[in-house]
Amino acid sequence: MERHLAAVLIADVVGYGRLSQTDKEGTRALFRTDLNEVFEPRIAAHHGRLVKTMGDGILVEFHSVVDALRCAVEIQQQKAEVNVLTQPERRLDFRIGINLGDVIVEGDDIHGDAVNIADRLQVLAEPGGIAISATACDHVKGKLPIGFASLGEQKMKSIAEPVRVYRVLIDPATAKIVGAKPGLSAGDDSKPPVIAVLPFENLSADDGWTRLVDGLSADMIGDLARYPDLAVISRQTMQSYRGRASDSRSVGLEQNADYLLEGTLQAIGQRVRVAVQLVDALTGANLWSARFEESIDDFFVMQDSVTQNVINALAGTFGKLANLGREVARRKPPSSLGAYDCYLLGAELHDRFTTDARAEAIRMLSRAVELDPGFARAWMTLGLAHTVDAFNAFTPDSAASVGRWRECVEKALALDPTDPMTRLYMGALRAFDGDISGAAEEYDRALALAPNDADVLSMLASSRALVCGNPEEGCALAERALRLNPQAPSWYYAQLARARFVAGRYADSLSSLRKSPPDSPVTLMFRVLCNALLEEPAQAQSIARRIAVEFPRFTVENFIRTYPVSNPPALVAIKEGARRAGMV
Image 1 (cartoon, rainbow, N blue to C red):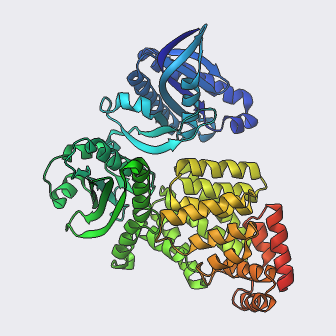
Image 2: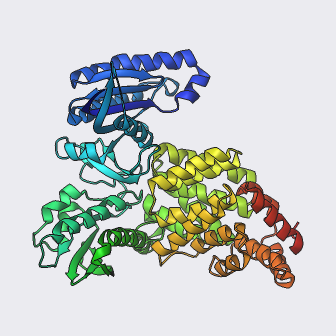
Image 3: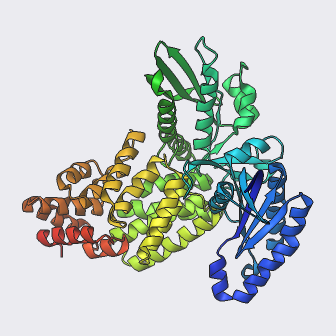
């Protein structure tokens, strides 16, 4: 059995099954045209070998991974140019995955883990995009005018160890910034912050710590780059500052960065101390800082822990960077608010549960997508606002809210299929449509894309419990989210409370509900249910009367239908608690 090292490229058509249902013969003809006119000439030009086609997939091997990536980039660029001039119903978009590894040769065919990983990689690529393994990426960095955005370590079916994956940034103009995201036009001065992570400084006498310090700052860059509302200067660019005495203003000006993240590591005996601070690039002011200390024996555990805690404190909808952006936006006249300003303010209002706040949240988020129709995260958050309106019955027509939710989430997914939050809400849509297995797949994608994002873990917790019937997993996810983000907003506790309720832990659920958004009708409903099932009828009925007065449109049945709740034990418990409290 022959083996050899090869760069493996796998391309797959996006939505081929759906397109074939409409026009099987026509779709197959389009595929053959792209194969003959786009793929084969590029493969030949870069010394590749077309191994075979696999239905709607294409398997190619190269001797050089640089050739493989150059070929993939040219294919996607050519397809983008062709698609601009092609009717939507006659366009095919491809996802491409590239890996480097040992392949097993049998005749003209190749197979093995290297091929399987390439296939898993293409699933993680966006339509018209390329995903590449770290093994392959290490061989091409600096050799092509492109950038890379880390998607973190991904668990892959039938592959023993997680694989670190990068998204290829094809446009040379974005190569320096690894956090370049869909949306937010260049003319909008209301934009996501740009953050530069300076190489962390080794304060220890032993130079051996320098490699570990480099790994820490690299992890920070990779994890920050995964947030859709941040732009992050690439590691390659920031490495040039190692050993240089540079003040914050000069670095900010050189990299067009708003904030700098700095850090030091010091080994003292058997302990390691890491200090991290966020600095305003314009003024040099210290905006946030944290210290971590662990045993040397646990350094790699500590490295993960430090990275995760710093990232969750800084990034996300309610992280330090977003809150700084809101402070800037509030100082602007309403007429000068840009898309990003409107998004930040709308996301904050969305977390409130009064009629006026709900209406203003939707108005601000609608304004954000009106100002920038390509702003994927704003579309996603607008969709979330509509779904919260639907299951809380804040509007008289829940069906209309569901329709707007669907429209917004589908738009967000088309703009950025790698946003884990959008994947979560697409899962909720699948569940609403009765496709529980499809919902579970979307939840799995979200978790794979952001395994350490506290916001994602918290949101996922109640879905695992109420939709998928895994309350213990839901509790574990919610508890981990709170550990990762000690400054968590109150809705984290609402997610934990729902998972605990489904697990039958009514007293624990009630404890979490006391820390949840106090004016949310769903929070109040779960308080009613817990009190009723704990045989505390007076408390249950008192809160039920409050719901009836303050939220007259809210019903348990509407919550079950629109959330949606599909786990049978959860349904039984909700209905029984509601019956005891007189809510049904």
